[in-house]
Image (tube, rainbow, N blue to C red; front, side, top):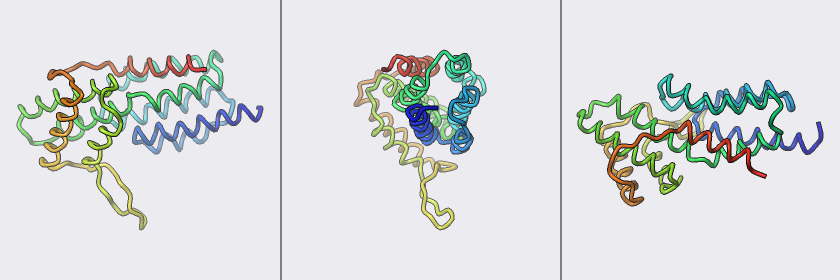
Length: 219
């Protein structure tokens, strides 16, 4: 393999790391590190593992995960069939990192992991669903940026000491105070972004397909 192609594969490996950091799964990336440059089958499996590990960590249902994996597996079929180049794979990786899909998924994770399992009144959970889907709609429409998403995520994180080092990790459980704090902040951000006050159905699989198509079209 030429030096240029090796460089492209190493670039994609680095991008894979970023996707996993966003998606919250280190295990998928460790598996992906075993990819041998130029082996399309192994590369395809690695990409599938990276994305599936990321979306699984978001507390999605099996049906939702399967739906999200459809565009990914359609793309990896093209890798296996030698229908895409090394450059295509690297560009798709970049497009996935830049897409709003993973920030949107992290917002959905907030509802699935914390709101649905909390003991707050059912009416408040229903209101939270409206807030979360408005927030996700704003992310997908690029009216809510990553800085705003990070501000919400900060409430969900805690600092712990592991092997003598302080690291930030997701809280296993949120207090009701933090739950309502998150909901108020998401609602304020959605209001500022002028997202209409209603629940939304957002097709994240379609957004993932858009990101892959954008990467394929990149020069």
